[in-house]
Structures are given as structure tokens and as C-alpha cells.
Image (cartoon, rainbow, N blue to C red; front, side, top):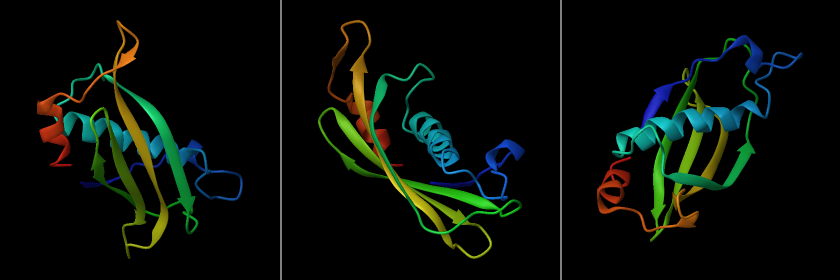
Length: 125
């Protein structure tokens, strides 16, 4: 899945770079889109267990950015999404990372297996 990111003025620091903390918010935008595309509902039944990011090149004010993401691994109760933020003009890699999501039952406060319908949806993202 790949789509254009809409950057906002408050995404930038005083030097005109996208602030490092903002990239995790960009990943979150992707997670919501991927979750809905996988068949999940708005009341997400998962928790974020881990997030990593590597900064490869600066994104400056006005640079058009795309977010590209894939499901890299599906486990019994968890899955891994990988992200790449690219300059849409030339596909220059700006940042990359991954997150680990775990299915979670908020009533019992325990992890649970990924439902088959969601598992099938994750294979398409």
C-alpha cells in the first residue's frame, strides 16, 4: 500500500525539517489505513507493542512525501508492519521502520489470536 502524506506546518522544526517525532505519527496514519483495509473496524482490537525507526535523509518543508507499507510477518497473536517514507518526486528514502501489533481483548486484558478474517486481510496489505 502506498499513499501521499499530507504534511502540516507543525510537522516541521525551526530548521524546516520534518521533526523526528512526527514520523511515528505518519506511521500511525498508515496503521489506521492498513487496519481498515485488512477488515478491522474503527475500534481497533490491537495494541502497539514495539516501534522502530531509522532516519535516512532529511525531509524539508515542501517536499512531497509518500508512505509505503507492507505486512512483513503474521504470527499467532501479532503481526509486523514495515514502513518506508519516500520523497514522491524521486523515491528518495527519507525514513523506514516497523511496528509490532498484538491482538488484545480489552475486557479480559489479555492477548488473543488474530481472527482468521483479519489474518486474511493482513495478507493483502
